[in-house]
Image (cartoon, rainbow, N blue to C red; front, side, top):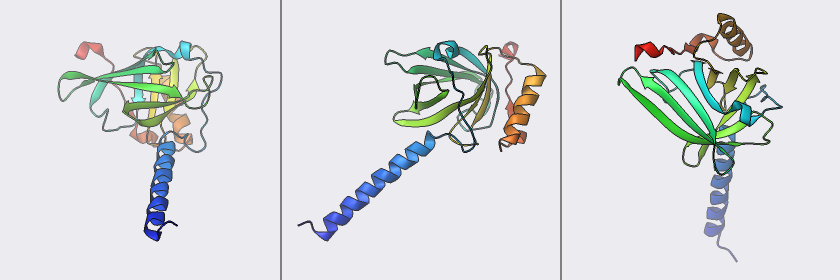
Length: 185
């Protein structure tokens, strides 16, 4: 027979494991009311993307000329190389991560990690047919990016992006338009 103390520790341990799994799942979930694009083709998405607009986060704060490069890894996942110029430090910074599909390879829904076993959602919720721009959200509405194959986009695309994300409940007033001018650095 198990002692009450051992049984309680077992339930507590199981509860902590379940809570940790739920928390990790929340980090890779799709924000409520949003859907990843379907018919996604990873090979067409690979390559270099420029960050046109974003919501601010500490890991990108003060960075200009931000880009992301996606390449295939040997294990079937995607290598993610993010790069940006720190105005304050007057130097380039970069971070390498890995990404894997959450459900299906034809859905623009991946989980990305830059820190060991911890993953965050990478949900492409709009992608043009030519794979020239993408609207991307993280696990909640505090993570948001407009990515483009070119360092500049039309003012109309930026207006459309702002209007769409505002309608989806994002704080569109807090968007940062990323300076992509290479002649500055």
